[in-house]
Image (cartoon, rainbow, N blue to C red; front, side, top):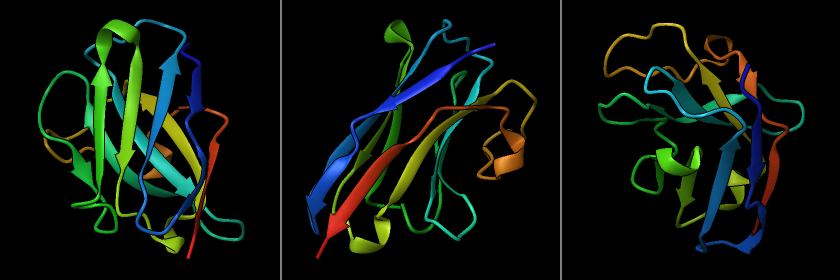
Length: 128
């Protein structure tokens, strides 16, 4: 079982940038599907970006396209989310997630129930 630990959250003004990190306690295997989600109190957890460690292009929610970039460093068992041009509506707790169950190639899931392993979350606050 893999444990995930996020870091890098904080407070930033609109238009600013942040990079979130997610370190896995177990080695990354190319069979892992991984994703970033975010949640605002009272709302559903929504997928932001997803990636397959075995290859292929990342998948992004419309709200993240052109502004966020998901990437991996297999040697460091770390997943990243680079966020630019941040908006107040990006304010949320951001979670890292992972799973080994098969997903359709190129359509990496942004659905919460498709991921079994979760980090504790890191707060991102964007002020106007």
